[in-house]
Length: 83
Image 1: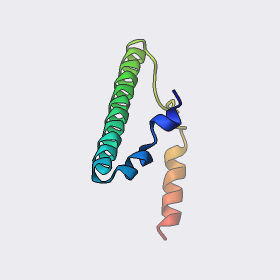
Image 2: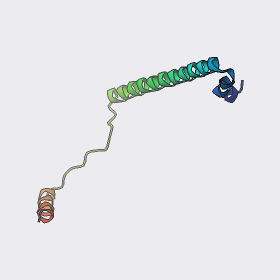
Image 3: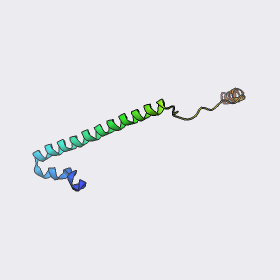
Image 4: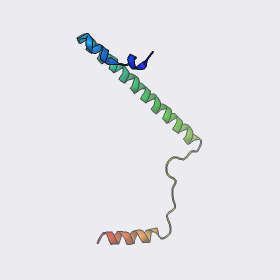
């Protein structure tokens, strides 16, 4: 069946007040289905992250070591900014 025709709620508008009720219910049903699918995706994502973490996968940007002269350069920069 053609999904475009199946999900076209404009056909209910020609049915008067009853059509408005049907259209509202139809759109509410579609919103509910979309919300449930979003929840499932978030659950799957959380499960995948948990599995990856248990296998030792590190997330995020890797840490970088601070160079020995960083503190000196930072203090010099801060002193020049706070003039």
